[in-house]
Length: 145
Image 1 (tube, rainbow, N blue to C red):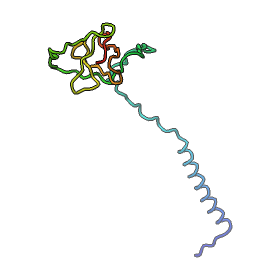
Image 2 (cartoon, helix red, strand yellow):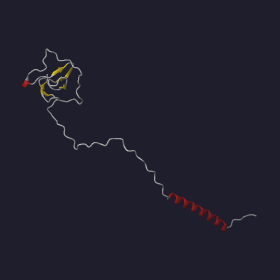
Image 3 (cartoon, rainbow, N blue to C red):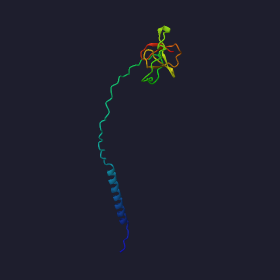
């Protein structure tokens, strides 16, 4: 028994395949339009940092003295145990305007020891000898040696 394809049979096969294809496309379309579930909530640990301290705004203005001595960016070196000054040279000599002289630091050509605050070094680089400079520790005037 041989089967012959008639135009009606071909039409029925085409209609069935086309309807299956349309049904599959409709299912894929509906599935793709479905809402995705929301992501799970993220739990954050509280920070272990201290709360920021309130700061003054604007910050307070620092005084500026254009005639003051040049200050190094870092704090001046301090000597734990400095030898006493030699007895032959007095620590301060009276000169211009009754101001004492700074004491030169051996081996440091631009540093002097203040006559008002022993053990404290002051950078006097760029000041000629005899120039009046202010001790930044006591705000008193002394002369560059």
